[in-house]
Image (cartoon, rainbow over all chains, first blue to last red; front, side, top):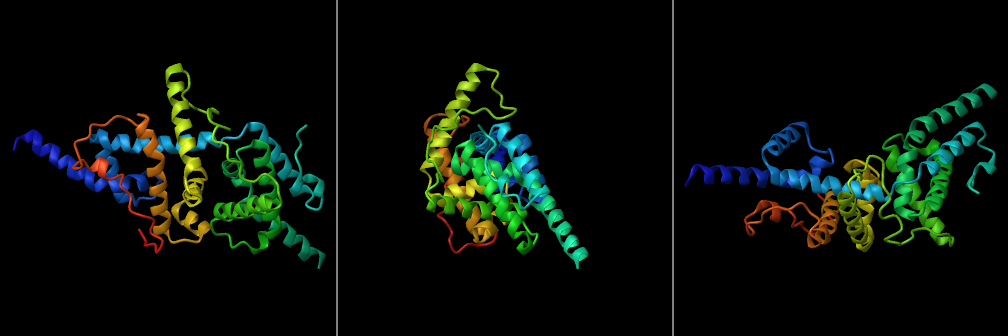
Length: 98
Length: 208
């Protein structure tokens, strides 16, 4: 077996160990030591790097879909301030929109 | 007596500032994933914040975001029962809304992003509610596994199993549309291909 084949085999066995951890890694739920090992593997493995990018893109896409206009956020902050200053005032409830 | 009552009100306000205010943006995002309409999402957040304000004294202080999301899910169900628009199923409603920092300077890239988002949105809408729910909590809402499992009342093993399965189902149509990054496949021996085969939903649940 050539050096190239041996190195490919070694990388692939690394992938087999790392792949089941990738989603947990992307979610920031891996233990520090495991996360370090995954990070090391990703430096050399483009294939696993692509897997990581797919999960990150999926999340980004779901978040893009649920982004609200800044005006909604501003009105909500205003609503909360009114609630804090006078919790008994039920007119705080409701939209400030036209 | 009045002093005690004032102190209690102050403590209540402090808890409100500590547990609810920092979560406003996450609440709005979560509400958007439920209603898809900014106006309805805003109403739902207001409803949630009011309910949280009133029940703050019963909150233990653990996992505030998960607690708030649980309140919102209940409020959304109540609204639905009351005949108000709760979950609007409209795959195209918000597809293509550019978020901050989205790399959309290049028209070609913008088109691919829009197509990617359309496929993801359609796949998401086709998912069973339990799969949509885990994606809402973890990917959209940013909950940790422990928080999401607590919000759903399931073991962490069940949560992660559902999450992986949900993501695998989102990836399938992306792959079919050629929207996943290209990788060379070498039969079933390729661990990258094999890793997508997610085992069934582990309802019994096991710790990771």
